[in-house]
Amino acid sequence: MKIGNPAEHSVGLAQATGHAAAADAGKAATGSAAPAAAPDASAKVELSSAAATLLSGGSTPEFDADKVARISAAIADGSFKVNANVIADKLIANASELLGKAQR
Image (cartoon, rainbow, N blue to C red):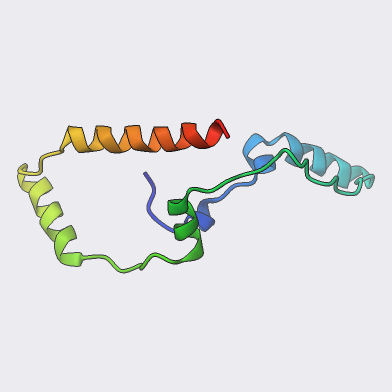
């Protein structure tokens, strides 16, 4: 898991696949770059409410430094316990949310 601004880590589809970027580079080298095609109407992305909040800056960037210190100390001395049931429940909830949006 990476921590930071999601906008700083975003990669376009062409950059992620490398195919379109290589094709664009080839066109630019030959000088025959075609005008950009209109996006396909079926190519639609929906963000979850949590993602939309993160991208809009609606969440506060502040954190509880004391809590971070307590957790760090608990990890360091070996007393930090992971609650597997809570993690499993949240994973299932996230998967259900994603599957619910995919079926629409």
